Length: 455
Image (tube, rainbow, N blue to C red):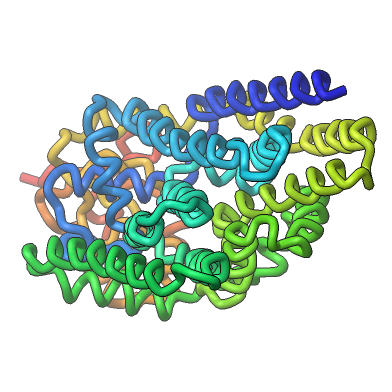
């Protein structure tokens, strides 16, 4: 039965990897991904985040991705490279979850990896080009370090968590739970040394980042957008209805087993701390979108596999029944696999055609104004704010935003506009009137080009 279990787990992980390769190439690119690709290309061309363009996500992500994305010619090649790079973080998370833990059967890590690979929200969101993916990798890496007996564990944990904070501020909730668990593990001896090392390392990483922004005169924009704006940000997404309930429905086995593993938290205190901290943060964080589960799912699946391993080793669940339970979980994961296959079949041909319109008809250095479509992510933007979804509109002065966009339309460096009917409907009528006054349809996708000047 153990051989059968190993074979089934191996096939499941191979299937997950094959699906990932297909999704990297074929799945439609979410507008959030295009937002991050655009910011990455701006950074690659020498722009300073927050000072030179509006954003409120982690700046380290764009800096790390810039050499990868800017090294490819054409919109599709750049986007595919960005997604492939993020998938390396996905693979890293799976490998860390897969590793054998002290006092556990090797199958425990394998079961955790299989559960995670087919965990609905994780499978979907870890594909996307967003800073939460590498931040989640750093968080689970820090958990591995904290569980070790290394004398410098605190320093490495602080470095990883400090870097993670420059990727995504959402990491702080899981990080707080992890540090509490790490101190509990060292309650008999070493807690003070660990805490001092961690604090010193976090402070050093923070100082390096602040120094970089200070050298560019961008400390105030950093504070205003990465700290104040994010602190006041309200997404409108309800933690229960938008995130937790759909996940409980799609992955009940992982949640039930994870709850059982949490009850035995002393076996895996670091992952238990992350899970408790991250779940608490879900109800505190102003951004309760499904991608937040990237910080929850790895710890949850480790605890789920720990519970199953504990039952088998204690003789409460025979190996045969455990294997049957694993088969049931795999069958339940069929929905995730079916969804992935549907996305691959659907493809992104229309999106690629629209990007090709911009690539072919707008010179690389010319600006394009794009409210929300993302079609022009590979071109400079005509205004400081490029991406304007509903949640950001709700947190900004709309008149100030529209005035800046109209000024961008009138700028002679702006050569095109992406016409988006549903996007423009959310803005004052004067904006679309200004577009019609100065631009005409190109006949290619949604791209409008600047009208020839009348002689």
